[in-house]
Image (cartoon, rainbow, N blue to C red; front, side, top):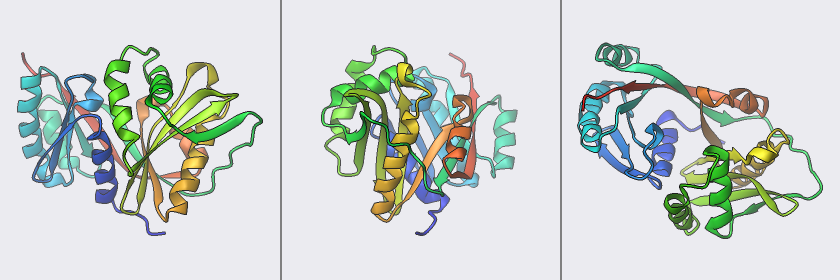
Length: 249
């Protein structure tokens, strides 16, 4: 199977998060914003080429200022000159996002009472996702309608790992040309360190490769998941610096 290029992987990611936040384009630059999900991950900008980063940053900053959020930019690590310019304008490097592609088979144990099944209703997937990533279900009124829409999309597969009938972890699969993007890999706290993520990834890889696609995912250094993915056969395609700037009120 053909290895996807960087732009294909970026389009997969941007289109996926456009299901969660408002997406706008300005030439090769994009902007994601959300009034309901206020953290920087849902309110960020980036560019598909190094030459457009300065223009994209100026355009995005105006939108962030109107919304009352600080500016967050994702910049390819290969765009060294552009990164230095943003750092000189008051941005700070706060994290790194690595984009990984699957390689070797993922060996997942077959455990009695465990299964990976497609989500059939938004409630259990939403509940497990929120508990895995937020530790509470406070955002259910915001997230559940998004998940309900995702369940109706042919591009999306929402998977649940169930342990003795209880949803222990979740994963989202988003399909674009040649790519199956994996997102929202989360394990409910009481089921961590049991292999839930591995079982989900193995099922996702089987699904993606059965459709003739390559599996790609993103991980932030701050999440501490890189070792897990490398041990499961993933390799780094490229990385992006996460830059933030406090905007004056």
